[in-house]
Image (cartoon, rainbow, N blue to C red; front, side, top):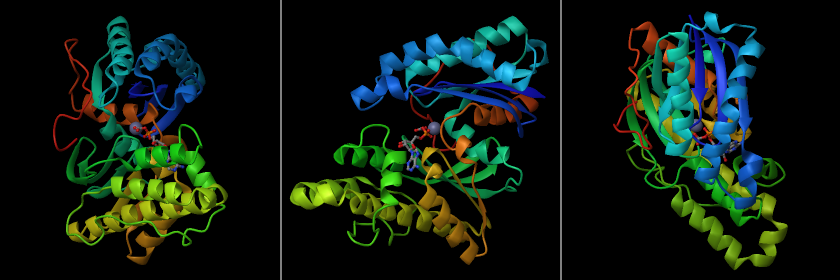
Length: 335
Ligand code: KG4
Ligand code: ZN
């Protein structure tokens, strides 16, 4: 079964063809970074307009890259939310119209469920159940994943998401937007132990996160050491990154131990972080847990993960009707 996936929840217009929820035939991601860069963040109205300009071309490129014709598409899956409403509406409306034209079933998919399914695009996916940490620009959430379309939320951030903290620290250091990749590249040159930043919620018996105190601590350090901060940007980035990574890895491992689950996964844009990947692999190995990570190409927003998740809904006969709407926030505690 070949599914066309469409993703347009934020500032990436993406389309992909995926066979049987596993085999990526093509994956095209058109980034709007250059459009939003001068503003230091995503401008929602610009994002939706750019999605509208790009969507037809991006889908055509995904078809061409896969070497498939329209009549070979068995179903369509599009991100329903969470995300920017104007952006979501472009991909969602396109998916409905295309499904109507091709006379194939279609389904709206949670972006978070998409990220959780990204590990199934790899050759050696986890068996169910597994513990997944979803770390992105909007979310930092731990899930007990039951199957492709069911996951129980164990804990989540009470304030900033991990990716959001990376983006804000990048701004404080004058590194521009988006921040995750630049902060982690800068951190490579720094000493993670030179400046020790706080690790929140490490000692408590729950799976929630908090990154606003860390963000404030970094800001305070920069304000109180203006001279040092200029010469020490790499050490600040390394110290900040180490604090984020420590908390994320420890909570993920703690959740696996508390649930007695032997498999852990790390997904979402921040899962592209080199140090986080390494530390997670090491910690999992030390405890005899199997670690599952999507390739870096499937960590950030992409449509292959949406097609993978949508496949399981459509296979179970859960196609949507044309009356469906998008949503900006996840409506329930599980995905
Ligand atoms: O999943 P994603 O592409 O979009 C959302 O669903 O939010 O995640 C984007 C987030 C941004 O905050 C970005 O700064 C962060 O992922 N990110 C990183 C890295 N690459 C992207 N954070 C840390 N290290 C990275 N290498
Ligand atoms: Zn995402």
